[in-house]
Amino acid sequence: IDFGLMHAMVGAIPNKYKWLARLANMEGSIQMGYDEINAVLQYAKSNEELAYLINESVFFLTFIELNMTSDQKNVPQLLADIEKLPNDNQMLVFAKVRLMSSLGRTDDVIEILEKFKVDSSFFKLDYLTYLHGLSKLNRLDKDADVYLKKYLKEFYGFTYKKSALQKLAWHSLFNDDKDSYFKYLSQIEYVGNNLVDGDKQATREAKLKTLPHVDLLKARLQFDGAYYDLALDLLENLDQKSLRNITDSTEYIYRKGRTLDKLGRYDEALKTYYSAYILGSKLPDYFAGNALLNIAIIYENKGELDKAQDFYQRCVDLDFEVYKNSIEGKAKSGLDRIKTKKESE
Image (tube, rainbow, N blue to C red; front, side, top):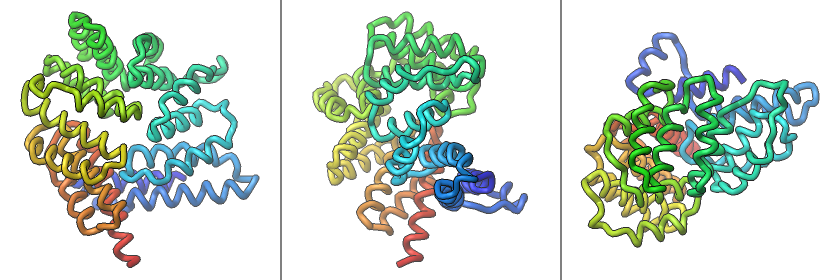
């Protein structure tokens, strides 16, 4: 498992730092790491003496699948494996709800987290509280702030604290409380750290001190919660005169593309994604980069490997700031897959 995780991490290193891995004589790819850990899982499932490795294997496979790969084709099988295991382990519950979220089962995520109780004798994984609040925010629930505040109060670590404050700011905005929006943003500087993309994005929003477009924000959250029809309806009825600048316009086009994609309207999605890329290619935001990534994924799924390879490479080469590492890592994973597929033809 350790070697598999190491190989996946080496494969996810941004291009500009690859020389460090070569200097240390370290090689690997995301796919190599996934395959090695999956081999451990399959062997452990058929060997009682190694059954203790199942939980750890499933957890790390979930981490790789959701954070490093672009196609996420293994999510249903991973979730099926986890659902066969007892629902009494925090790490497995974490993996389960993360996989369910990726499949758009937000209502199921909320139901599981509301029922799950941590044994007081075990270390409490506060991140589950954060996920609970985030899931309820994606559903635009009025009480989403309760769980986000609980996370900030009870978690003594550093990650996702800035993100939690950002989400509380958004919740305030939905309730037409602009004063509280800016109050929460003003606190972001003084808590947590910037090691994860969610916290980096929260820090960036706090520094901008610009109100987000409320309807675009709601569409984003509804999309994240897999309420695709609601998100598309909101976008299609949005008054485009309310879009204030090129960033708003790019985000509008990008979010429409994402929603069309999830609804299976791929030809429309491809055109919309490309428009988002052209309009937003000079912005620091992730819209253009993620549009390229998703164009590549659609072409890969269509079997048009040359086009997929082209757009994965464009994604890697594009210069932007927000979520750059995670998006680039998924594009590189896509390039690895394309290479493997072409070699097997």
